[in-house]
Length: 124
View 1 (tube, rainbow, N blue to C red):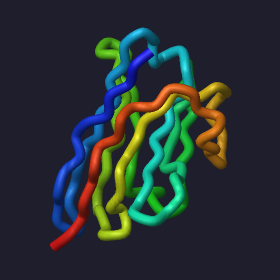
View 2: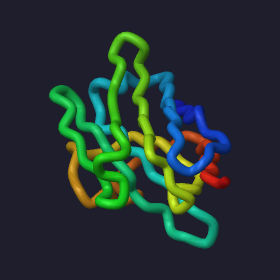
View 3: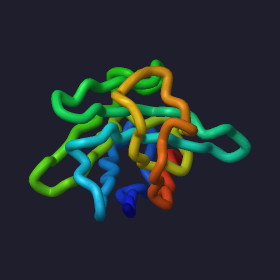
View 4: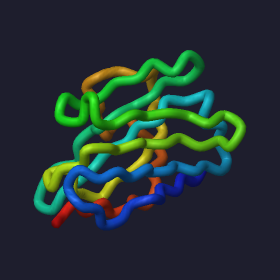
């Protein structure tokens, strides 16, 4: 199983980015997928997750209403649409496969396969 996160970059405050998580060796529709982020000097924190099947979603309070997680079954991809970005959203973002149904809070130890991360920098 391999995951690859992409789509990060430098964006101004208030801007928009779409992160993509591509997978090989696993069908993303059959597993929970989570997005985590880790800022400099911070612990890895859960941002959002989407469950298998009916796709129950959860969001961190800090991103609720600004970020949307979605799945494209045909492309075997999961996306994180991020709008109204703030400097505090600056971090490396990772996607990962979850061991259990989508739930909150998200614990990194409940996620098995991780992508390499993509850097998001929000700065003027």
